[in-house]
Length: 49
Image: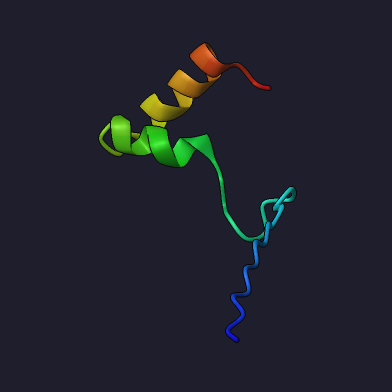
């Protein structure tokens, strides 16, 4: 007899320890690396939330 084991794991990274998610990283690429333009976009369009 052969047994197949299946396992599914989930990791919740609520504090941003495993994955550094910052929208600024994405918009820096979109704005060609211009940090001021990316920050202006985030504060104007996205707000401070």
